[in-house]
Every structure is written in C-alpha cells, then in structure tokens.
Image (cartoon, rainbow, N blue to C red; front, side, top):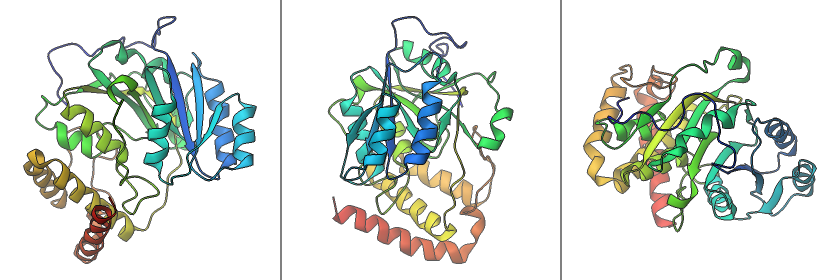
Length: 308
C-alpha cells in the first residue's frame, strides 16, 4: 500500500493527549444481549476509556438489551428500521464527539484498542482509522509493532484496496464525525439486514477516499471477532451484487474494478496487504457456483435498485 510523501499522521506509539480526540464507542445489536454483555465488559476495561458508549438496538426494542446497556452505563437507543447501516448511521447522528468508533456486539476490543486507534486522527485529513480484527484463538499472535498504513486516492490501487478489505472490517473502525455530517455514510442498501447483506464499511471507506480524505489502518488496534459461517453460494451472490453496486455508483473506477476481478478470477495473490492474501471460498468455488451466483447476484442488485 503506497502512501503520500507526508509521514503517517498521528503518533505511532500508543499515546493519547489528555482532553483531545474525544470518542464515542457505538455498538449495534439485535436480540443478542449475552454477546452484548461480553462486548461491554471489554469496552469497560479500555485504557483510556471511551468518552461515551452508545448501544443502538436495531429492533423494536428489547428489555434485556436495555438492561445490559444500563448495567454498563451505556446510553441505549432504539433504531427500529432494520439494517446494520441504519443502526450505524443512527449511531453517527446521535454521537456528540468528533470521533465515532464502531464495534460489533460479538466483538471484544483489546484494552489498548483506543490508544492505537485514535492518534492518526490528529491529522485533519484522516477521516477513517481501522484496526486488526482477528479470531479469539489467534489474539495472542497479533502483532502490535507492525506500523500503520496510510491510504489516499493518490495511490493507484486505492479503489480496490478500500473496496475489498485492505482497510479492515466494520467490526473495528472509527470515523471522523464532521466529515460524515449530512450524509448516510453507510449505504442503506448494503450490510446485514439488506438483500445484499455486506460491504457497507468498504463502501464508506471508498466514499471518504473519493472525496480526498485519508484512511489509516493500524494493526495495533486489535479486536477479536468469531468467524461467521455463510453458505458459499449466498456469499458469492452477495459479493456479485456488491460488485455491481460499485460498478454502478463509481463509474470513474470501472476499469479498476474489472482489472481487480480479473486478477482474482485468475487466483492471483494480492499485491497489497490483506488477511487472507490468497483467494477465498468464493473464488475457489468453481464455475458452476460462479454462473449460479451471477444470476442470483444480479437479482439481488435489481431488488436493491427498485427498492430505493
């Protein structure tokens, strides 16, 4: 991943200036109070602590979820329009700090998570910072000494890096609130709870970078998250629908998108950092799955367009 000539913004060591970089941690949840409790326990141990914690209940309201949120002195609110993007956008609007950090309800941050996640925001050009998301059993092998990586739209590969996981996952990210005001930074037709069901965080990264802001990935900001199992056919169809969304919404980068997809279909190793580097289940599933998924993915994309 290339970077501008400027040095990576913010301190590279885990240092936070007192009274600066105030942050709200937003946890979106839906009928999973047991997971939420474990997440909030980890958040309560953060050093330094978050300035505010906000639990967004993406349901009609759940008493047990509210009880758990209150137990950890988190603000609780209900967003009854279903969809992870709806909940994340609501969390952004309801926060009153300049930095808004996001966790999934089944994720657990390392106690030094914010120490590493926040310093890059000292540079006003940085709009998003993401960390390293790993399986719980692999947490001990995560390397905090790996340097941060900066990405801007001056990098010739920025579009594919931001679109396809080079900046990490939505279960471990923070955004600058002032650059997201007035827009739904998480696309309402993407993410869990929508037909496509994925890609909302990557779309947000692309949107911010396309506007000239910078993104930073900090491996030292570690969050553990269990693996999620998904049918490979459904995963492939969702991926194709997401690719079609990118193709439609970013016409200036269609050549970049097609070049990346051709590279992956040939099962080539990525030329920029991502875990995993090698092709995953979708690419390795074979042409029968490809053809079936093209039809299903096209239908998912069409459903997305007509329901806007």
